[in-house]
Amino acid sequence: MENAVGKTVVVGLSGGVDSSVSALLLKEQGYNVIGIFMRNWNDPTVLIDDECPWVEDSNDAMMVADKLEIPFQTLDLSEQYKQRIVDYMFSEYEAGRTPNPDVLCNREIKFDVFLKAALKLGADYVATGHYCQKNEQIIDGKAIFSLIAGADKNKDQSYFLCQITQEQLSRILFPIGHLQKHEVRELAHRAGLITAGKKDSQGLCFIGKISLPDFLQRRLATKKGVVVEIEKDSPVFKRRKDAKPTDETSEEYLKWLCERWHFVKEDGSVIGEHNGAHFYTVGQRRGLNIGGKPLPIFVLAIDVSNNIIYVGQGEKHRGLSGTGLFMNHSDISFVREDLAPALNTSLRVKTRIRYRQPLFEAELFHRHDGYYLVFDNMQYAVAPGQFAAFYINAELIGSGAIAP
Image 1 (cartoon, helix red, strand yellow):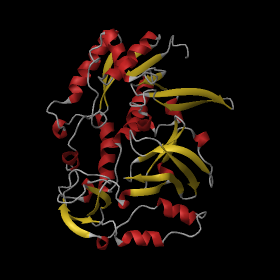
Image 2 (image 1 turned 180 degrees about the horizontal axis):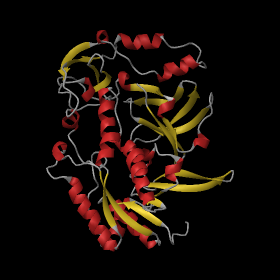
Image 3 (image 1 turned 30 degrees about the horizontal axis):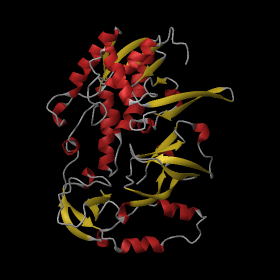
Image 4 (image 1 turned 60 degrees about the horizontal axis):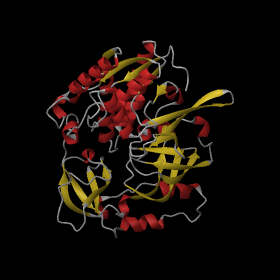
């Protein structure tokens, strides 16, 4: 660990126990610590809870700063959050994709807008309460930083940082990444921090627990459409099988493996209505209000152009399955550019396509039109717009948004 004397760290105090203990540890290590609460949302009307969570969180953050005897201030980033995160959410849902605002919040708000504000204050680093770790090594005379999964496997949050850059990572500290959650709470209790027993926050980054349909209907209009059920013996599956290239070493075979399911109305039968295809996401089970089937109904695909939702029975429905996915060059980001596969080569990686999903084995292919990720074993509910994160052992090396 580097000499902390004379170094200034701005800690994003969220009002939770993790960021509180991060500030505590940094102060004990000798850093000059400044606590800043980011106010990123000021519209309580879509929250499920009556209380506005940011007010309580801000008060808790201020009390932690007072206990630790560190400077504290509130930074209003609500306008930037609306432009970069909320508008992004609306546009993604409107296009029939499933956004991940937490991933974008880290890339665009915490480690861009907030980081730049901290540097203007003269900070050397920013720190957060993420359960991640960071390593530094010298390669060809240059400092290279690695993003490592948190030591607590149940709390690892590296996936949410999958879009940050090498430059951003060089300025970030993760003080609690080497700890287990119970150890963090014990440290908070020992220090007498008000957040020691506080429950972890839920819902969207810096917003809280929201009613997503109410949130989306703020901007996206309701529009009646049909729900089409795809049976397990639908002709679409035979068409897919018949289209399989014979040469399994060809690029056409790679594209076939990663092609998404595309249905038409004639592939199934109408079983209900919905209020707008853009309000749903692949893999969704709740909110369809369709019963009377032997197995639960899941969303298989969304056609926003024709306002049709395709569904099927059971979480292992063939229409939910996937053998690979495609990512455009513009949607790929590598924390470790030096580990990215060169054009027309491939790389063995472990990957996940959603938070808390166990890592699975895959091959990442770099081609002229983009990147293909081919799974060793079938995966389910691969939703366009979500991020596929790539790991080598416990190190997250990059990620990409899944193409439609």
